[in-house]
Image 1 (cartoon, helix red, strand yellow):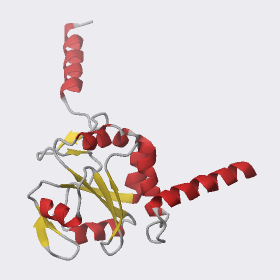
Image 2: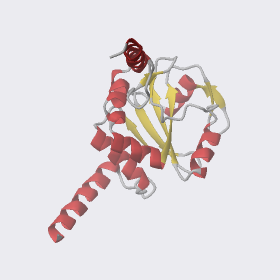
Image 3: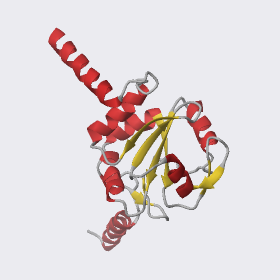
Image 4: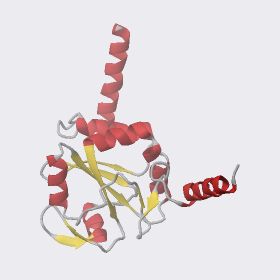
Amino acid sequence: MTKKLTMTLTALFLAILILPNNSFAGPQMRDDGIHTESWMKSMTFLDLKEDLAEAKKKGKGLVILYEAPGCGSCKKLHEVNFQKPDLVKFITKNFDVMQINIFGDNEVTNFDGKVLSEKKLAQKLGIHFTPTTVFYGKKGEELFRMPGYLSPRFYKKGFDYVLAGGPQKKVLFPHWIRDQKMKKKKSNKGS
């Protein structure tokens, strides 16, 4: 190899090592200590009515992840669930996802137009566990929440439940899961 080619290859190798590559980078860390993903909605003024309107305009639902700095379960959600390409593809196809730091001081304009800090919003909503995944309806009403970490398969079922209209039909999540299993068994027997 020529000296010039060796230097070029060395520079290319160093650039690959040094420059961040978002397609391989797992979760990132925000300035406030919250893990995040490149596909999550970060460009927001935290005006929840506007964020919901934007999601609806795209034919999607709105999900807010309530998280905390240093939360091990939040980290696991990002390191395990959000590293599953099929799950991420499903979520991003159907929902805009944004994040609230339950200890944060950023101002949030709630669906009712009232302005309060992230931590006051979390308190008002009774968010006691992190991560808590909350799904919102067309008027900003809470449809469903999943407190804590759930395995990828079970976590996806929460999204399926909301898309199937389970909360709107007043079907409890465990009953909906049971009914889905029964439907699957019946369809397998019929095959």
